[in-house]
Amino acid sequence: MTTDLFLSNVGFFVMGLMALAGALIAVSQQNLLRAALGLILAFLGVAGIYFMLEAEFVGVVQILIYVGAISVLILFAVMLTRGLMRGAGSGHNSQWIGAAFVSLLLFLILSAVALFAHWNVTATKVTTDLVPKIGVDLLTTYLLPFEAISLLLLAALVGAIVIARE
Amino acid sequence: MDILNNLFPNLYDWLAGALHALLAGLNLVKDAENAIVATIMALVVVVVLLLWLVLMVLAMIWFERKTAARVQDRVGPNRVGPWGLLQPIADTIKMLIKEDIIPTNADRLVHTLAPIVTAAPAVLAFAVIPWGKGMFPVDLNIGLLWIVAIGSIGTIGIFMAGYGSNNKFSLLGGMRAVAQMVSYEVPQVLTIVVIALLAGSLSLNKIVDAQGGMGGFGWYILAFPVGPIAFVIYYISALAEVNRTPFDLPEGESEIVAGHHTEYSGLKWGMFYVGEYFNFFLVCCVAVTLFLGGWQGPILPPYVWFIVKVYALVLLGMWIRMTWPRFRVDHLMAFAWKVLVPIALVNIILASLFVTYALPALKQMGLF
Amino acid sequence: MVPLSFYLLLAAALFCIGLFGALGRRNAIAILIGIELMLNAVNINLVAFWRYIVPANPQMALAGQIFALFVITLAAAEAAIGLALVIAIYRSRDTVNVEDVNLMKW
Image (tube, rainbow over all chains, first blue to last red; front, side, top):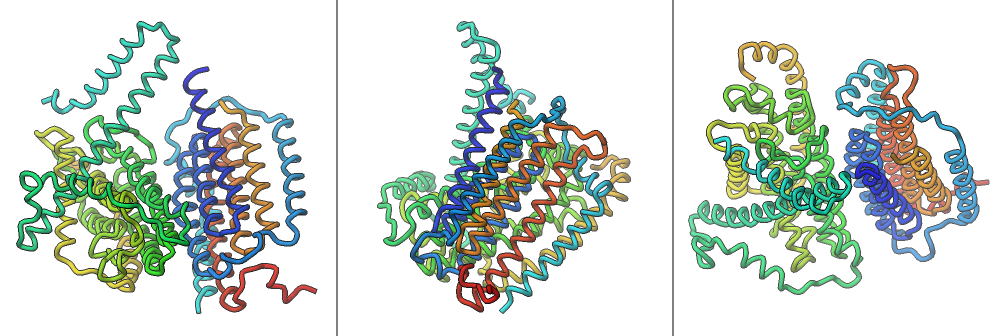
């Protein structure tokens, strides 16, 4: 086994474990701040997975937006609605057993598809610097979704301010 | 001169060669031998970088106290060693032997992890900075975005510190600090976009190489009118990002006790203090790489030029700290959103026009 | 190289954990956390397929990464609006427990 192969396997398992551990913390903790911190760990793990998949731009954007902005947003919201963090009882609602059953069933179906389907995996690509190509593609092939997303972000900005105003 | 210029890359190659020669006697498989040598060299680079950073931080602590003293017409520390040079070491020893206090009813895990989450990203970001010709630990093709992204992880640590201390002043200071840091990230990233436009790449090595014209003086700060405006906006937002005066409302003693690190003592407080200096040093290094040409310069070896330029910016930051009063919190936010962001956006438009029309003409004239 | 099915398994696991979080939690912000996990799982799938399968149309060579970028942007917008709504509900009803916001239940 070459160094490359070994390191990519190790990297995948470390990052995957980090993402799964973070996700489990995020959905099981009753204390919302710890759940948010588990979510941040999951985001960092997913960013590591993107680096393993040689999509560095998406990985860096993941860290910048998810960890740097969305997590801060969630933490602020947790702080501003603070009354419920010290409440008694578990964090689960009255239908959590059904939710667990459905999640487990879906996981079995999805893993069956992932393991037993025949994917036409093509040969490995040569990875050159793809960031300029992403920029060019965003403004030529994918111009319409790009402009639509800009409008959507503007709507979200104005909407969030109007809704959360006093 | 070439020997001095390439001193550290030559040392690296010599050490790698020596390790290969050492392991050749064991007759390992080629892959295993390469893997072991690569791992050891990586560890050597990491250790050297960390030691260098710690030395730089100690030097900056001494530098700050001496500069503050001279600006305030006094002498500063001069007892502990010649010119007080051993003062930071004395401070470190004092900090290490202090008792570690965790408030009752505080979230122990969050309280303990917060200094680490604040200080670690600053060290991570140093891996992509070119310290001299051929002296970069990692060359990421998205190096610029990496620094911005890793810098934005530090806000989480400050929030954890503010919440985990079970103290109203800490919480308020933590939330103010996070609001300030998140607001000032926007002008910072907008000015970095200008540099990416001018250089045509996000890799820090390529950005430094692109500033080599005019005999090593083709710096982006000289690209009127785009360069100086971008530099000023970047420096101001960077000072606000690292919570230095005049933007240190979250931790000013007369304002909010000590903000998010009120309840910290001993080594944990030391991590916050050192983390702040790491961040400030990082921001000055990035400003030098992007605007002042990195290690480009005539005559002197490249790494000497880099350190000289970084310390010039560090001196500027300390000088600003010693002379200006701090901002009020609403003035802070208004300044970021109503002044810096519009100027940065107009700057991006000017930079696009500059790159399309002026840069080819300037390249033909031999500048840039 | 790590086989494609490993990445798909990881994404499926993350999706189901997020699904459990979105369906089985009481606090509205915890539900939003579950939704963010589901979006991340979908993104891993997209980027894994981009890496391992080259599309027939060469113009679409970067479709996986660009789609993932759009999903990240949408997740940011949706998190902002969702949290603004949660804060507005907290202000008027003084609770973020979704079992208590049941005026329109029959």
